[in-house]
Image 1 (cartoon, one colour):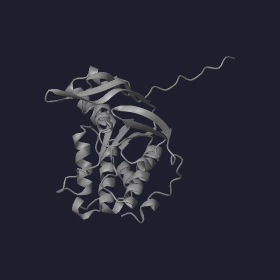
Image 2 (tube, one colour):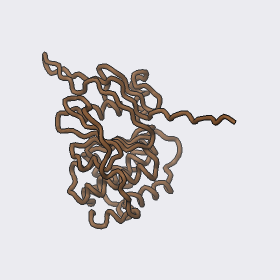
Image 3 (cartoon, one colour):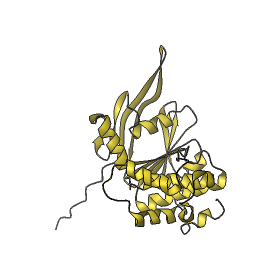
Image 4 (cartoon, helix red, strand yellow):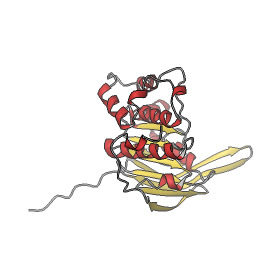
Length: 254
């Protein structure tokens, strides 16, 4: 009997010949030049490079937050170029969770309130899944901090609340832009481990932008950018990190 070979999975993020040119007066600045990349479902990929390398512009292009001058971005089989503004917004809300260097938590709301409002803005019809929220809270070790406002939380706790806010809609893709940029070493390591844990346990594709090669080393693949181009690729040296039980990595980082 002839065996039927399974079809290879399609990339969940695909970029082809991406170029982004900004006008600066009479000058034109090329921030991203001819970048092509492919990320498979469930991968954890880091893009690393110095300031001015184009990595943040690439992040905004891949997240549909800005439009390419040339080339295309395909997210989970959908080409951003075929969508109007409202359709792109809807795709971002339903398929992508964003984590930024600045926590962007609303100061007048509790951690719980910040998570709830993110879910409400996503436009989902179903009520918030409290069992899933409990799972996220345990995963990120913020169970006892949900009723506190941002000013009552440490930097690491605020970033973990921001991650919970990004994950609460169960996005297929998590895009993190310098998620440890405002944190000390202990909290940075804890947040990286939580991103890795959510990638492994929730099956979400994770793309992280960072200037720090040590932070990038936890990814399965690292793409190095310089002058708007991807110049090389490596495997993360900590990609095979064995994670402790949920919360154990955070005992000294709160």
